[in-house]
Figure 1 (tube, one colour):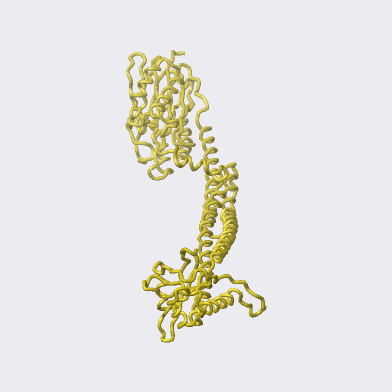
Figure 2: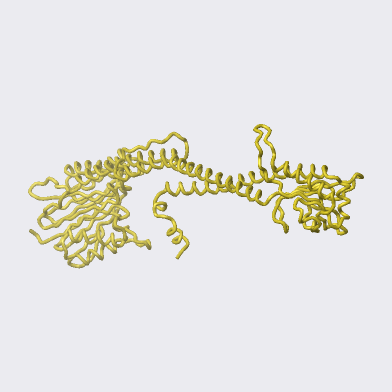
Length: 539
């Protein structure tokens, strides 16, 4: 199991699902870390304050005691084997006890009440011995300890006190327990140091100091935790007000309300800028939706301009279709009933305006109007029709816009096709009797490039029963697969041969489907248009 999976199991679900909860927890953790540091600092500060107060009191007490004691008497007691039997011991001890009592039972100068202060609980005098690191308890507050030897070398501060008063920086532990000690030298009448006076604090006092420090630190931690909790809640709430508004706006947009606009908090922070970008995005979506609706209407209009059904022509089958790669496109096909006396003639056109989309669709629509109007005037003069449409495109179309066009006039009675190709894909004619394929090739420039261009008619085609004519755009022949291979005319011809006995509609559908399968897309890369004319038995 990955560490991420383990972590996700440890984190409650409501935190994993709520960004606000995650933000609140993050702020709370940061606040807790700061609170721990604050409590630690507060505890150290309080402890240091208590320690300094105790050191100051003990320093003053030991210095006064060292000055109050008779140095000569203390020096003499150093030579007495049992100091407790010597009157000088009792004199010095009585003075020490009175000094201790004065410290322990101090009188408050303002209230006159006795203050029980147990900071100082033990006083003693250490005299010299032959070993500089060992002292002798010459005078003690606890009478039973008098005369005992004491290893001073363990405590550098005590050894330093033979030269000047000193206080321990921290509590020290010996065989008598843990205490904070202060020392001062005792001098004889000649000024020589003959002993050191010592003052010890009570272990209970230090326990009280520790307890007070713990209480103080705990109070600081609780206060800090409450402040952190309030801060995390308030900050996450303030920060997520904009986020909540943005979330509501997103939900409304997701439900289709593109009129939604989110009001910022005017804080000028990143959330306000994000809200501004969101509003811009919604306006863009609204504009795109309007464009999309306009494109849908344009597609409907363009589709209405295409033949709704193939004409019913005796002895022939017609089928045509378009697959646009966008809502609209520049491909076009049409069947035009031409006026004729006593006979039936049909104009058949397939065109491809450069590019695809709205601009190409508009150019196609204007060209269609010119083409249909001209076709009914010039009859089977395909060259004149091409020249008229060419002149229109040269004058009306933007630069670099042109239209490839295949136009033919089918004389139904004569079973004859007169055609012209202006830069368009060659039409494919399959002869049923021989199985041969003819290409009605592109011999001229596309329409809209050169004003005075002459467009000649191609060789007239005469149909026999079973012949099939396929007119397509380059969206079919140039359909490419992932390897870059084109579907090509070979692909179209293979499908045509495989379906030559099928109807015109079936042939059209088979070619379009084969091109799409070759390209491997649900939508072709370019507009694809195809018209199929199949010659049947004479009527």
